[in-house]
Image (cartoon, rainbow, N blue to C red; front, side, top):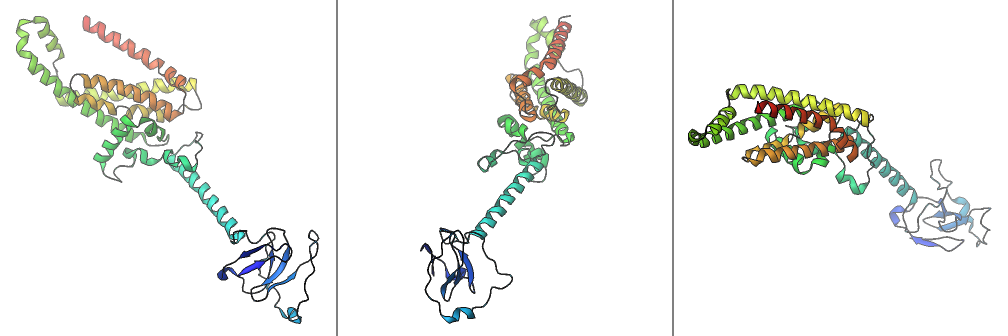
Length: 339
């Protein structure tokens, strides 16, 4: 049905299902003229309005006085009740408000789920929702809920090595450190076993030629393991755990002076623990352990910057105490080996 404004002749088609059941007061979206409209009789009368000069209306039949008055619960639009495209304005506005409310609540829920407590969350829009950090970025944290422990371990190692910024960006300061510690211990045990295997294989390969070179024989004797595998696992694992907490404390202390508002011991601990994943490159003989060490250092650097929201200058400066201590220990080891 076509509804035409009696003042400016603006008209639009309204589907029959959207027509009111009885006469109502409508407002023209073009000139704001208010008029009474009935689906049976069309425009009945133009209501007086001080902003719009009254237009002469044709004489109306006596049956106008017999129209039913507006019911108490009738909705009378205050402004343009209909848009120019033929849709009701009020439902559209209400739907837009509800959509905006749902979007705001969804963003707030994602921020809570990500656990960025005490830190300024990054502003996100609909275009970068896929880049926002989430709990799914760390499969080890949710294991074995999805695919089991083994799959979660494999996926976590792959994400640390090849998607470290996104992985470390999703770390939560209130997450339990035990998960990260268990992951670190698994890496350490695998590394010790693999290195022991390659070491024994190398000794067996080179032992027949040591009779002609006393210095080589002395070197191989020094490198040969003096304890059983179980004892080696127990001792080296304990040393590596102490090393983890020691370097975590050093780096956290440095960041506490550089950026007190961003320093967080739990995050630094998780970064260093998870950064041990590239150590699995020790499965490659000779160069695997060295490549894994360099990769671990790169992961720690990237992880501290992403997890703590630091600049590159702050990140690298915070490693100064740990580097100095490492150099000191290395010099002590070399001097002891020469002696």
